[in-house]
Image (cartoon, rainbow, N blue to C red; front, top):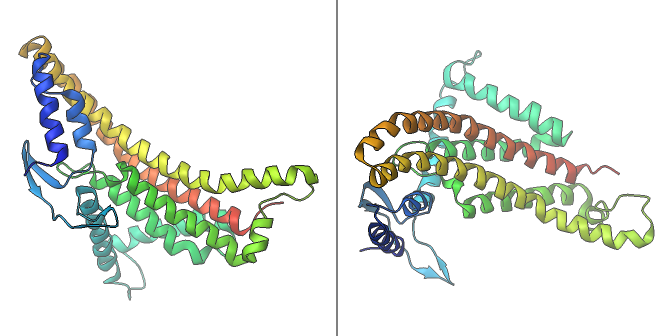
Length: 290
């Protein structure tokens, strides 16, 4: 059975055919970025995912991006299991040694430097965030897979969790009243206090919103560039001739490979930035500067 997305894609293809193209470039790019209710095996053939009922207006059906998050979680659990197999060894080696380097870096250079004396209680959360985002980013580069972090709903969920942890850090240290008092710098004139308080409350929501949009935009942009170079070959073939497509192919493929390898760096950097900024915001909440 065709889904709404598939029907729209079919209509877009018909309109593109009327305009002289054998396919719709915009639909091709957007169709690869958007979430779907199936895993595409080949063009036009997909493996359907379970459809669940809608409860209180919320569609609980399993989608491709949800499946990718599950796969990332399974991979995380498998990697942790493999690393812990030789935990009794005095000298770590192999996968355990590689993971310890990353764990110590997040703990010492990210958490402790950004949060301070109470950093260790937040290290498990920061590590989970870093590895989950990293795996979601990297899995999106595997052919046939999808980038869950290229979905604004997924990054919004991650940002919401960060918001909860950030506010928890301040509430745990100071309590409700003092936590909100800390939002206002000391020494302000009385007439500025309401304005600063309103701005700081707004800032509490802007910070996680920035985390959400930054991760979403960076992960989506890379895939758009890759798909644009690929579709350029077919556009030239339709508009000019198959010979033009063959001439453009080496250039487009070269740029695709370059951007693909660049995305490996971006995937790691974005996971680090999200984790580092979250730790910074936790430190600002737990130890505000006056």
